[in-house]
Amino acid sequence: MPTAPRLDPQTELGIPPERMPRHVAIIMDGNGRWARRRGLPRVAGHEAGAAVVREIVTRAAQLGLEALTLYSFSTENWNRPLDEIAHLMDLYVRYLVKERDTIMSNNIRMIQIGRREGLPAEVLNELDQTAGQSAKNTGMTLCLALNYSSRVEIVDTVRSIAADAAAGRLTPEQIDDKLISDRLYTRGLRDPDLLIRTAGEMRVSNFLLWQISYSELHVAEACWPDFHAAEFDAGLVAYSQRERRFGGLGEKL
Image 1 (cartoon, rainbow, N blue to C red):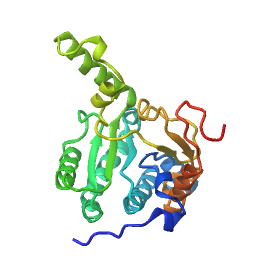
Image 2 (image 1 turned 90 degrees about the horizontal axis):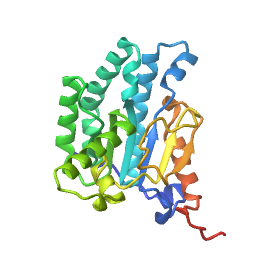
Image 3 (image 1 turned 90 degrees about the vertical axis):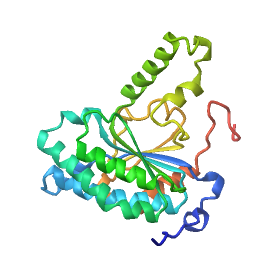
Image 4 (image 1 turned 135 degrees about the vertical axis):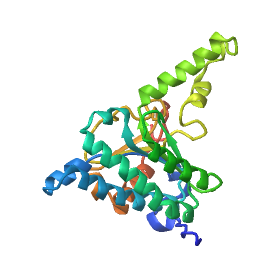
């Protein structure tokens, strides 16, 4: 299978290597609004959004990102109409099958974060197929947040730590930032450098609450189906112009 070409961010975007984010997380918002503005059913927005996922995933991999995390379906999304949920689950199955070649040709390793309980067997099967086939790929990690809630993730982490403490495998003094990070669904991934949200919304919606403590934020006005490579690139360029201080004074002060 031919390998997709790699792009140099400095040549392509004018971003030097030390200014590129290594992990980008995206809240993909606005599919329903995109469809409503066009007089279409909400599911049409989800279909259009799925096509953009391929474009952004490919762009991120070719620019050499270490990881891209996409907020795809939250635990709260189960409150949506049943027909919309059924369409979304079918869309995941179709996407995972259709995009397997794209994932492999871009040397992408795909993983899922979120609870598996509640997801249809067909979705879990295709997730496992794609994750298994791509497990040895050495390029970008595509992290699909599916049936995900940050608060649920933190609860699961606390339960895991509490169980070890109750069994005498841990003492309270051993619990620190690193231990908690190592118990999260995202263990093994660096925290996101950049969090992008589409559709102009100014909230983080229960997404990676622990992990985005020092992430830079970029809000794009475009709804997700209109968020193409140019909008993604604009977010990377905006990030490259920030000064990250992590609580310090920084070089300019």
